Image (tube, rainbow, N blue to C red; front, side, top):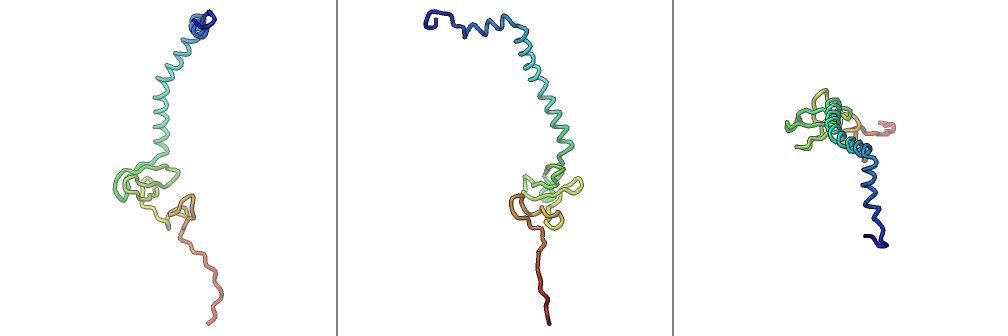
Length: 126
């Protein structure tokens, strides 16, 4: 018994609500139960659908192991040998800073070296 001699309403209130509104609690339980059964297969199907359209998997030209990367990004790194790879068609090739454009060989945080040297020249007199 709580101090003061009354009933403990905190313990009786949930029981009273379940008795008064059984349909609400049964429906709530069923909703969570069905979500736990249906959502995992749906999410798995959705991820596989996205993966088939957005991820390319091909062997690394350096070590031969399977390398994966996003199709839209166009480059990745082999997780086995660490080679920088760029996408050509449906296969990976070793990344070249001269053929793969200005983003090759640099990082998104540092200065990118694209192989171009800017030189100013003056007139040379013999």
